[in-house]
Image (cartoon, one colour):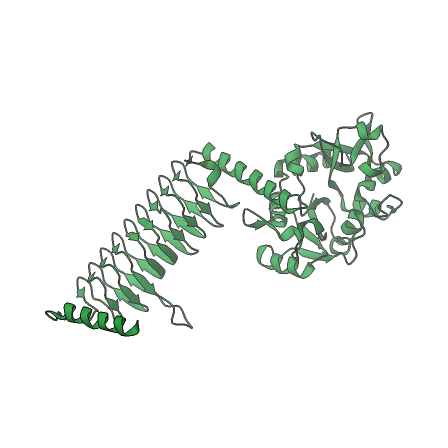
Length: 448
């Protein structure tokens, strides 16, 4: 049976104190909305709908890059969760299958949990609700069961003293067929303390219609909702702790785990060693046996087997570091490929460059890749040696085995095995140092 995902992302999130929609605030560099969507996408839904409200244009713009196939429905007025879910009605009018309703500010629900809900819906229930048992249930809606069946959900502010004693709480996540979901939503009223249309009332309406409702449970951490900067920081800590544990479980050594930060798609192979204070941005792959030394920042790059990165290195998007290559301290690369065994050990910048196998780039070398309008490439051949403090003015190539003398500015092709000197001839003037010092002292005296 086909599956559709509806993600409610219309709330303002006033406690975030932000002009940006709450669901676009990042966890591990990725908006929390995309965490929720990514989990659900592993179930391969046929349709995905995001219900946006506050900052809808920002949400739509973000989705264009992340998931251009997602349909965006607009909730003009925030009148409750049932009203929000109902905005997806027209987008799913021609859809015949099951629907899972998620929340864009609840990023940690596991794919396995959603699959369990889906299996329960298809096996025995018309409506399935995700529940959990928190340490402190005070502010959560309660799941009221009778004879093993879910009878209704009552919000904490509407609950009786007896109902407040119930420990099983509502996450808000619901699974039902598209037909049942929207039929039941159309029966929901707003006769509650907040005068809002609660999606949770779907359970009571389902029971009144003779439909079966059941509960699937998960851990409290999965249902963590984010409403403030403090809760965002807590979510970041939860994500990073899970990522660190997962990395170490597959054979990665983290010298100081609490200081290493991951993106959702970071991939480290076994026997990778990561020293303290390393940040992995999106799109990083590090192969077996590589070492990432302290205070390095990697993003959008691939690091080959046994390569050494850092300390204090920055690998920017488009960087590809070959097996056994070395990127040393205070080296930055951008859209640059270093083949196996190449070395850039100190204080250098390589942008829009290709460096051949076993080439050596001396300290202070830069590729001058930008002319103020366009970017240009630099090619350094295998086994070439670039002396310290050289500037390679792109577009330019240095042939295999060539040597560039230290301090050179290279603006033309250097043939293979050639020696290139691109600096002015040195001129030593005997005795001129003392004469220069005397003139300088005289100027200083005059100035005083």
